[in-house]
Every structure is written in C-alpha cells, then in structure tokens.
Length: 343
Image (tube, rainbow, N blue to C red):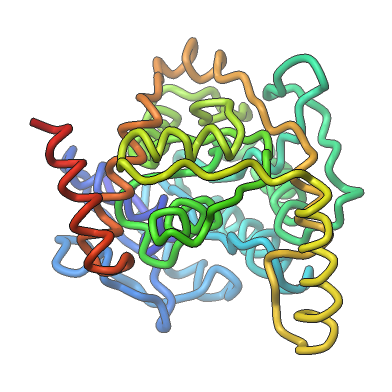
C-alpha cells in the first residue's frame, strides 16, 4: 500500500509524514520546487515535484497510490483572497479529482477550525456549528471554509473522504513559524510583553498528526472531526509558557489598544508602505471571536485524546532555542529550566 502526502514540508504535514514512516508506510510526497525541504531530508520516501494548483501534475502524481493525506495549504493571516482561493480551494479540488481518477481508496483532508466557525457566547462550537465568519473578510478563513465545502462536493459518493479540522498547532519543527508558532516564538524572544486576550484553542502538533492517522483508520467517510486541544485565552497560553520556561508572564492588552494597533497597521504599513501586515483591522476583529471547541466526536469515534499544553509548549520552546530562533543568552536560560524540569 502506498500513501501520498501533500504539504509534507509544512509543520503539520511533516509531523504526519514522520508518524506514517514510524508505522512503516510506503510514502510518496508532493513537494514544490521552491519548498524548504529540511523537514524531509534523509527520509526513505519517494519525492515528486509539483504544485497542487497544477491539475495536470496532480493527475500523474497520484497514480499507484492507495491513500492520500491532503495537508498542503496556505496558512497565514494576510494576503490576497485570489491567492488563498488558488491554493486552498482550487488546490483541494485538484487533489480530490486526481484521487478519484487514480482510484484512491480514501482521503484525509486537512481543513481548519476556521472552517467550523466561532462558538456561541455560552458554549462550544462543534462539527455541526453553522459557519459564521464570512463577515470578517479574512482571506485565509474564508478560503478554508470554501475549500472544505468544495472538497466534500467533489468527493461525493465515489470517494471516501474524511475531514479533520485542527486548531492552533504547537510543537517542534515549526521552521517557518505558523501564526500560532509566531506567538510562542515572539514570547520566547521577549518581544511580547503584552498580549491580546483572545479566546482560542491550542493543541500539540504531535497530537494533530495522530488525529490524522486515526481519521484515516477509523473516521467515517463524509464526516469531519475537530482536532482541538485546550480552550484558553492567548494570555493563558503564554502564562503556561511562563511556567514551563521560567520567563516573565505577559500583561493582558485591552482590546482598544489592539484595535488601535490594527488601525495603524492597516493605514500605515498596508496603506502607505504597501507591505503585508498581520496586525490589521480584520485580524483584530478576529480576536473578538470565541474559538472554543468541543472535541467529543474525535474522542468518541477516533479514540483520540490530546496531551497537555505544557508538554507542547516545552517541545516548542526547546526546538526554537536549539535551532537558533532565540538569542543564545535567552536560550541558555530557557533550556536550563526545561532540562531541570525534565529531571
């Protein structure tokens, strides 16, 4: 049996790839020519160059494969809607169509909790929540919802498709830091003394990878599974990071100040300098959404149960420090604390 993985050089995709190799699967990885391949160097895998936006390339790449993990996607909180739609939406369509043409048995598609929607004021969002984030106008968020809808439509009844919706992943191997990893990294660098009190869900990337494998083995075709971890504010996340690393806890930043920062980013950085900026009004409005999720379905049907957020943060901090993302002085302090806690 041969398994095909897209996005294998990314944070989640490389972790999924590692887990698949650990259990002895024969792998074929799709890699863009310009990708950073450090995550997959030296692995006993077949590599094919290509881009999920190239439908003709996808048709040939999947030949001979029995299973597919479509993990590739554009994950950042700024950019043009057209590019997000090309990569996330049309890319998903191309992969699903190619999988059907190649006679693939089963596909696990990596969506996002952004495609699930925000939780009600007093409760948790789950797999049946009606999507409610269109008014935010955030290209990534909109594209992930569109992509999941199209993937399910394209699969129809002819292909077994299981959708997984990961929350914010944290852990080792975040080479090009994801938005979640960027928060942790900036805190480790001492550049986040203040943090907005956003309501989010964070999860160990190793648990996310395990959830992918369980979705392939146990997930029901046509169903989606939220791979979330811990419902907490960003302030609570970094408070946990402080306990793990021994660094100073950040102060909570009132929403008004976050709004003013977003306004400045949008008017000056985007408007005057014409540069992309993650701190803009759309993303500040995202802070007011309640991204708290139930993971009961994944627990009950997949037997999946995520570990502690402190473990994920320790792995993330250790990896960032060991790989030169944090100054040597701060790294020594953080690593000494982490190694002391591990004894």
